[in-house]
Each structure stands twice: as C-alpha cells, then as structure tokens.
Image 1 (cartoon, one colour):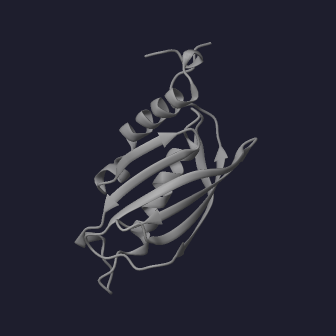
Image 2: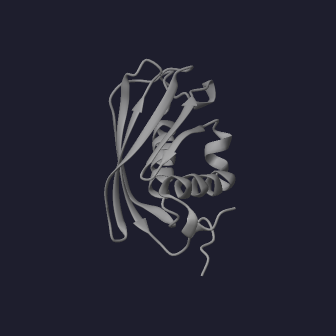
Length: 149
C-alpha cells in the first residue's frame, strides 16, 4: 500500500472507505453496496426486502435512516480521520415499497475544524426523492489507514 503522504485525496477517500467497509457489518448484512466514494461524498444503495417492512407494508423508516446514516458515515470519514455522528435528522417525503432500490447520495456542505455538515438525498429506482437527511459530524482521535511518521 502507498504511504498516505503519497496518496492524492481520491486515493485517501478510497483507502479510508475500504478500511471502514471491512468492519461495517451492519451495512453489509443489510445488503447495502458502496457505489461511489470521493472526498466528502459517498453513494450507497440497498434493495428493500420484506424483512424491512412495517405494519403498513412500506419500508420501515429506520432502514431508510440507516442507509442515509451509512452514506453520511462514508462521506465524512473520507479524509482518513475518524469521524462520528453528532446529530442527525431525517424528513420522509414519499413511501417506499418492498422491492424498491434506494440510493443515498451524501454531499459535504461544510467542514471546519472538528465539525462537518452533510446532506444526504435518498431516492428510489425511478429517481423519486423519498427522504432528505442532514448529518452533523465530529472528528475524534484516530485514522483509518496508518499515517507514516
């Protein structure tokens, strides 16, 4: 593996995402895929299964939140710094049915000091927006890939 000092920002984002993905049992076991990663950006997707349905026959909002939260995590951790969620909110816009393919696209709005703000748009397979998520992040100690001294 290349030394971090010799990597460009895209390579750092990819290496950070690979390190995180290897330990992300929740996203993997829910069937999510990491479709795109770039500094401050990430796209994840998942197909809604019957196990994700609520009493109305729609996708339970917690699974939509989880998809958005995972996209948020990959976007804000794309700089080889350990980053955690500080605050998150979601607005549900349209219902989601079993079999729908959801895509969460995360984009950095602001990153200053130890704080960041990220907007995540969740759409279905037809491009219809089903939810909007905003995450506030906080950088903590540590890195995803070792940094040479």
